[in-house]
Length: 93
Image 1 (cartoon, rainbow, N blue to C red):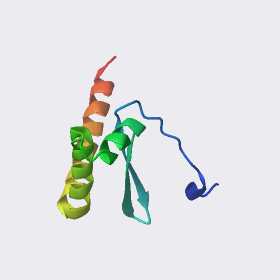
Image 2: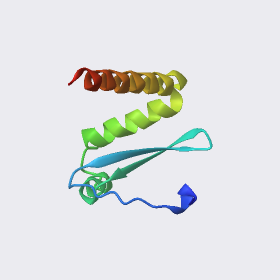
Image 3: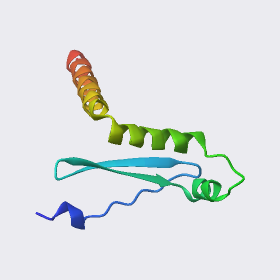
């Protein structure tokens, strides 16, 4: 088995996109925010406003970091969604 820290994944962002990448390291959530070159250019331009989707992704990461209940509530919501989708698939012939 290969150590997962040695494996790399490439993400290709479309122009104007941002990506939040979440992972688990030693039981802790790791997080990174990536922006396409176009968004990076807007962030570097002091005359430009921060794009809303970049702000929203940043706010999500700050809340994840600062609100202990948010991460567990988010995980619970996700589990409920998965169980709901699994139930719908079982109902289909």
